[in-house]
Image (tube, rainbow, N blue to C red; front, side):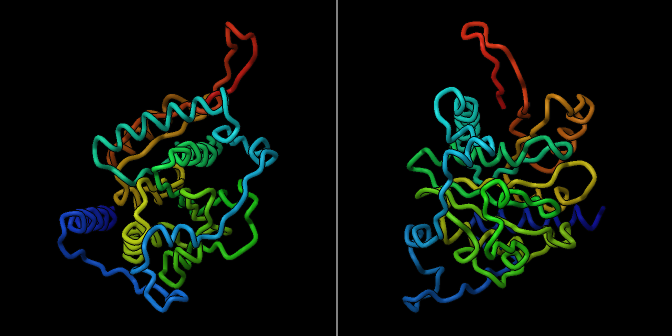
Length: 283
């Protein structure tokens, strides 16, 4: 435990030093060369975003995977509200990195993460990134129907594959880092200096306004203990039909010891609208 806490403190210090203009403890890896012959780190962010492989998200997939933020009208409203509240607080504090976690599995945190990213990306002046950092149970690739391809997060975090080759793009301003398979030794990977330098490198070159990390649940593993020192804030997603108040309280308490907690999103809440007379499901 002491070694983990010391490593987390070191990661926080390195990020602060970078923001203050001082030399961090680690150096970004050298990026591969694009066709122009210039290092990718010297290419303008606009060109890097445009060069990412673009994927479609059709209406059928949006309905099947409950991507309410793409379905418009009252379906998108809860995520629009969540987006606005999150952005206001993050901007007020100068924060950029947001983790989305849950007390345990099956709370819907990945669906919430993706819908929040999609809602943010409807702001044309925002560059948004969503990274699948639930290394034990990655699921973003499945949600988006992108299981095929070379989406290997372990290679990205080890520095052997560049983000420009790894990520996909939806629309002009949402970049998504997928992962096809679980990563062995996930906590050690997240705690490693290569992960920290990779994220700093991505942030430096692509200049995103917000980076959302879909992380592991709080209970039953030490992945968040290893990683959350590298984010600015977090949302906790609880399932109304299965998460107990004790689990929420315990997770909020543990989460607040690792990063700034924006709040708790109660997912899978059903209610009957008294005016329209139909059942809905808000997140």
